[in-house]
Length: 325
Length: 275
Image 1 (cartoon, rainbow over the protein chains, first blue to last red):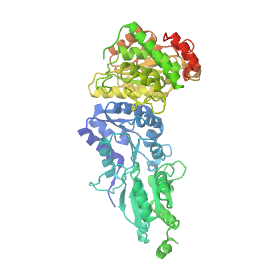
Image 2: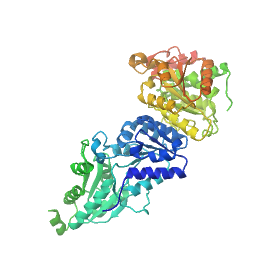
Image 3: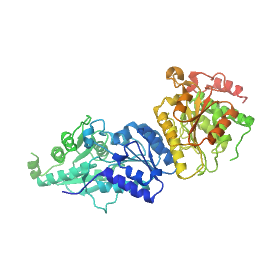
Image 4: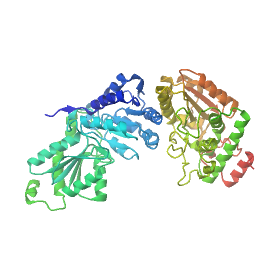
């Protein structure tokens, strides 16, 4: 079994490392620094860390003020509170002003687990994606989050990065380079394309294995820059394979599934199946049980792959028709 | 920039700014008359008599910072920035027009001298706190001023930020509250009472001053006094009259968000001694 890393822990480590080199980096949290992992930065750089208490609106506003005065603020709390409670502050003061605030929010998706629906952010990506100027990123593993945070320091403008509560398998090695707006092909194939975000990228890779065993070859994409989306890669993948499955630990509305469908509807319509949560809130349970309950496992992606391939408009081979029967 | 401390000179600038405000609002055909006029004396005293600024270098590192948290008083802000030399006063007539750099509410990416976007109420004090924290980290001496509306303090974020400023001992932050006692739907006291205002801010740990917001001497004295306070933020609760300076607008709820008609403009200009 491959190594697992936690994106929130790797965020905390990376931020503390970067804080050593760049004195303009400051961090803010809203009483969740142990969970978001900004605590590491707080311990190393006491004077550059601000715990705002349980006050997310003030968290975002204060981060904005620090950014206006030339600091590079990283504002962290749980994804649902950052994007929900602080949405209008992010919209009005941070994004409208184009301010250099980095929002790195943990506990995205249903893998928050036992805390239940109130704490599981399943709409954070939608809330951030609709805001002009905002870059929206979801790391596919503990390596990618490191590269994203390093990149965010060099980028001028607002950024939203979602991290997860639970550790999950590592996909990349240390040579990985993150580039804004560039998706990556993790595995190539001709019959269809699986496009994922975060933990679901790993599930896409597992699904591709299941499909390969059935004689179906799937291309797998990591579209970790949800916005700006690598629309050229999405269109090229549609042209190459003729069908897509999107997979996200998020509502199917407003996130990756929506973004991919928007691009394809405008540029190259092909059948798409969206794996994600469908208009319900999360519930308490163990992360794995919830992933199964909401249909977010590799087998669900494999099943969606079969479904989408049957909807393909271009001819498919006799052999494949047998498999899909 | 040389500061003006002569009271009659400041009063004369305020008169001219009020003329600018009614003229530009009339030209725009929409905008916030009452709250722009109530804030005029406060902002003239602050910008001309107190703040360290360099209109030739809007990003001067040592400048004092200002946040117009009650962003709908943008006409006052723009008129003052223009008269200070941040841009050509002739541009004031483009307020709210398509393509203008004078947006309906302050936009830091459009207007020289504007530090931060505002207009959605309740957010400016947090931003001011962030600016003060940054200045402290950089050992810079600049102060941060923020203008709040009275209705605005109905927003919960104001009280989050009030807690933060006291908690972080942000003595470089001076808030000024334009207490004109009216909001869009009526009297503040009737819509959602904010009293006892001074007690609330004192209870939150703020050095709290109460003044007449149309008395230049009192405004300057309060701004000076705030500078002497250590380890605590200061708030100046300035009692004002909404629509101040033009009798037909004074204390009238209606003129919160209504621009002067041509007839009203004539009356206003006459009362302000412009014609």
